[in-house]
Length: 325
Image (tube, rainbow, N blue to C red; front, top):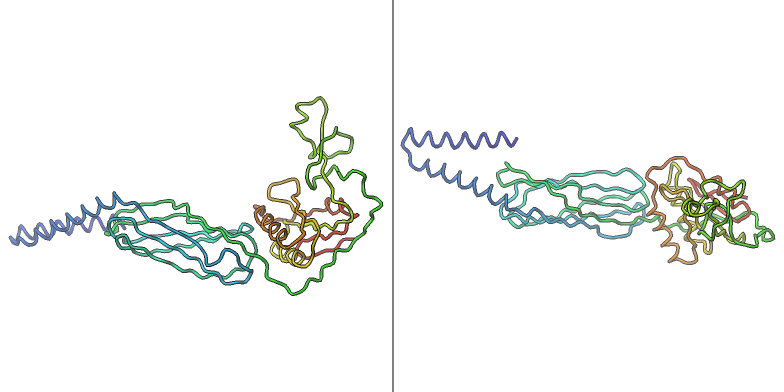
């Protein structure tokens, strides 16, 4: 397309000059000269262009699922010449799912701006990232083109929809007589309490290889274990319908207090945990879970942890809530 425009411009100049010489028409020389000066000025000013300034935002930073949102895109031309076409490629991605890309094309005048408002409907929970992938703009003749990386990024959070009631009960065996004297357990749960020498039967993924390399013996990690009189929620983030699992978890967070939640972050072997005591801690917990979104959702249960917390009151949350006895 650009080759066609350049070729057409050269042919036009040639025709004007040839006609001026053949018919001895002086004004045609002026027209040809004016076009040449115009093209030269266009190239010179475009070479000095500073690109575009782009700002992106939404009407709110927090939404509820199934809300209607509004993406606000503001572009300002910093070039000293008009821009015949600006193309902005925008990507919108939920960290749990694949993203979508959209492109917008429009002209801009000298040092002028344009505001774009794009409505959208939210159908999933989680953190959404809006990125400006690429910006391309052309000179006023549409012959030259430049690309720039904006680096603009905006994120907003989507929480599950409010529910009126919660039918979830934390039921299960409570055996306080069997609480260990030391609240530690050689498993991948909770915070690291201490280290001890390896014993037969210990799991290999519990070995602290850095400490082992400095010592003569093999050492494994010991973790704090929640007391059996405290309730535990196990969130499986590797289920087919993670959005449904988050809805179920949110129903628990809104109506229950004083319990631990364990979940497996992306690429991690050890579970993260958080204690829910009030509305603020429930909010912070949900944000932490969103931040540790898996790179890919797949069937990956946490049966080992269901066995570890068999003596607790606990809930295993996948697509549906499952109270475990």
